[in-house]
Image 1 (spheres, rainbow over the protein chains, first blue to last red):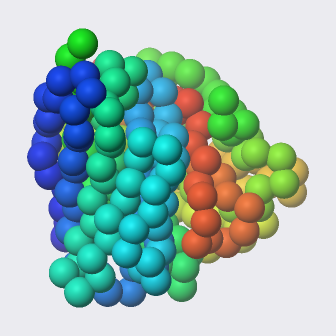
Image 2: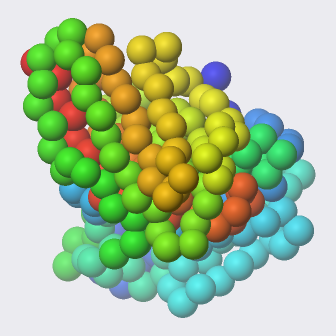
Length: 113
Length: 113
């Protein structure tokens, strides 16, 4: 059972534009929502994370918006750059089950110069 | 560089064989997680160890086993390998049992012929 659904599967954005990736989850016990960035041949690297007690978190050009009632969260990349071209994964975990990460399907982002 | 090391980087073997993947967590991290990344299944949690003890189990096949040693490094053993086991295997580590950032290693790419 896929507990975290991610969309879109792929995204093409012009340099300087805004990239938006969305995720929806089912398990209301999830209490930690990270976003990971993965470049080809590399392991996933944490980008930004949020807990359900806040609705938004911003770090530089990256912002997570979190809607607890809708069980949705999204990643916004402002002023997207070609160097942001990578695969992005949303994830969720609950501390009581050992914090295994349940990942979304991934979004391949391409930022054109 | 996340501080998590994995060896080997690449592994090519035949069906029916057994392989061992090794992971060294970041200095001071007590939890080790194993994930499998394949094209059809995405990133899937396999198993977690915390300070030498199994903490959580995911969709890990019976042919697969893992352990964490007193020096906190971990090994993932894959036996009776099948073509479908070809994937990227990632190790991640975190400071405690969970609810915090997991740092991923560079992965081991396994190809079963």
